[in-house]
Image 1 (cartoon, rainbow, N blue to C red):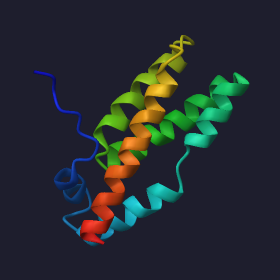
Image 2: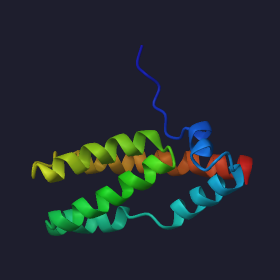
Image 3: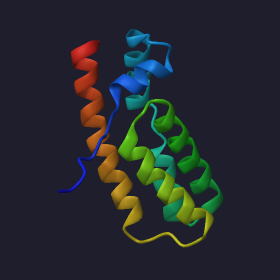
Image 4: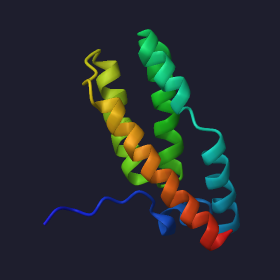
Length: 114
């Protein structure tokens, strides 16, 4: 049986903000509007690995802090590949897919707890 993909660990995320669910929802709302995905996409397209690594690092940090588990894992993998200067052709697509799923889950959490 395959492991279920976890896009958002709500309980862990709330714990990270000292059990302040209102603050956590506020941070998720900010995440929705202030993503660095476009920056990452543009840097990769331009072949600017320094900017791509910075954008991936930012996304990785934010997703770790918000307990956005799957997106964190996929962005970590992409950042590792960028550092190694060996980005797999489909890794950014995997990140974008995880991002889209994560945004859907974030929206559900905001609706349920906002």
